[in-house]
Amino acid sequence: MSQQQAMIAQPITFYGAGAMAEAIVRGLIGRSVVNAGSLTMLNRSNSGRLEELKHRYNVKTNNDPAETTEILRESPIIVLAIKPKDAANVLRKLGPLLSDNTLIVSVIAGLTIRTIQDLLGRKQPVARTMPNTSSSIGLGATGVSFSKEINDQDRQTVMTLFQAVGTVTVVEEDKLEILTGISGSGPAYIYYMMEAMMAAGIRGGLTPQQCKELTVQTVLGAARMVQQTGEEPAALRAKVTSPNGSTQAALETLDKGDFFETVIAAVNRCAERSREMGAALKEGIS
Ligand SMILES: NC(=O)C1=CN([C@@H]2O[C@H](COP(=O)(O)OP(=O)(O)OC[C@H]3O[C@@H](n4cnc5c(N)ncnc54)[C@H](OP(=O)(O)O)[C@@H]3O)[C@@H](O)[C@H]2O)C=CC1
Ligand SMILES: O=C(O)[C@@H]1CCC=N1
Image 1 (cartoon, rainbow, N blue to C red):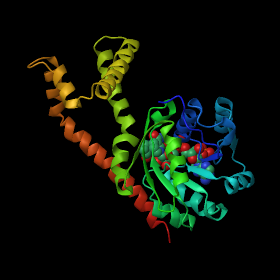
Image 2: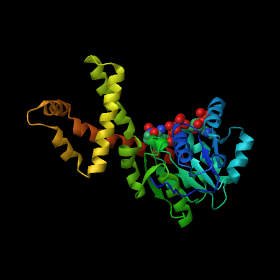
Image 3: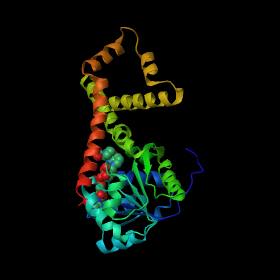
Image 4: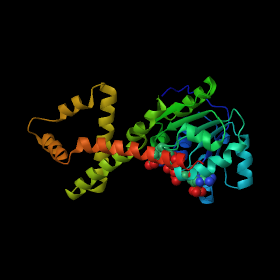
């Protein structure tokens, strides 16, 4: 990542102060793309959480209903970082507070641009994004789609925001669900794999600390190998796999559990679940 990262001068309000909002805020501050004082994080009721965030990042926080209304009314950029189940209520109340050029950036899984605008009751400029939690260390992978109301400056702001915390892939909106299956939820699959590898090592007599160190370095090294050598994962896998050797035996065991197709099914189910959540929100509009 370049040292001369573009700055975002406008204040940004995070509507929702949970795991994903924190990941982005931590990344933005870590990369000095924003001044902490220009970030505000709002939640519904968890004041302890806001205290923690204020202490950790020096950001402004609030959950007083009257004050948050004023903050939202005056925010040029609002990042929606609430759960899908809370989105309908929040967006219905938010719509009347916006001005025509308030930029809405959503990280909410499944929620389409059309549904966001319908719930807001106005054709707001919207960037629908799907980041992941690795944004917190600047290694996020974010997918983005823009509504047609977005102007070039807003588009650049959104690109700057997410490029500051990792890579950005602009896609057609109907590809965001499958993208969620790969990169939005993907860290969880890798962690699950790591959990299983560590459990195996512990059962085999290694210490938890040894297992963690070995597993982390293995995952890190494998990802970096793909990135730095430019070789395909399949080619790199072949280099690890001696004919009739131990790796082949392990991979055959994975294949007995239909590993490859199971991962594909998991990614597809994730995408499908995102669409289901989006459809439920759409149906809720009446
Ligand atoms: N976690 C992840 O890996 C990723 C998540 N996402 C998306 O990010 C969004 C947030 O997820 P995540 O951060 O994990 O969720 P969390 O449960 O960690 O956070 C949700 C936040 O929303 C707040 N909130 C809920 N209702 C309101 C309301 N009416 N007014 C103000 N604040 C409210 C909660 O406040 P309180 O605690 O006070 O109720 C909380 O701060 C989801 O839509 C998810 O799809 C996208 C990519 C990856
Ligand atoms: O599980 C979820 O719904 C969110 C979306 C992507 C990652 N976490």
